[in-house]
Amino acid sequence: MASRIVRLAPFRGPTSAQASALGQAPSPSGRVQVWGGASGRHYQHSVYTLLECPPLPQAVYLLVRRQANGALKVLYIAPALSDAPSLNLARIRQRGAALGANEVHAYLLATSAEACRTIACDLRAGLFGSLGAQPASPANNG
Image (cartoon, rainbow, N blue to C red):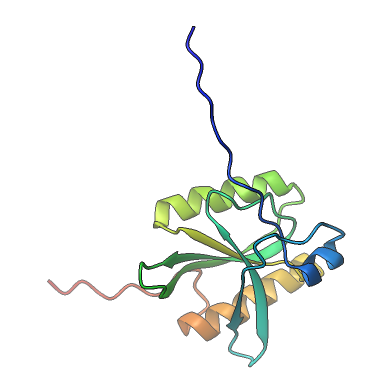
């Protein structure tokens, strides 16, 4: 029987401020991204690669494609509302893989499911100009 050694990526958790709010250890990478909503509010998100994203409690997440030149394209915005962090992670990874995302930007400071929904709508309106979870696709007139 053959065996294979697999190296796991280092864990990257939330920033110090978010970690203290969640009672967790801070992220060693400390990568954050601030996104603005239509309301004018700004939300500080922890940044993870799609594969290194830890199980998330109720949160708002953006699936993002980071280009080689560093440019960011938001592909999807949604609340993660399950009480089971591993279920939230499974949904995030499935949707991210389907859309071609390579990063997850998670806002972990929402205090309830309703707050998650409200923040997701604010970010969608601010970044997409609509309340759809994904940016509107241009019509194919060909």
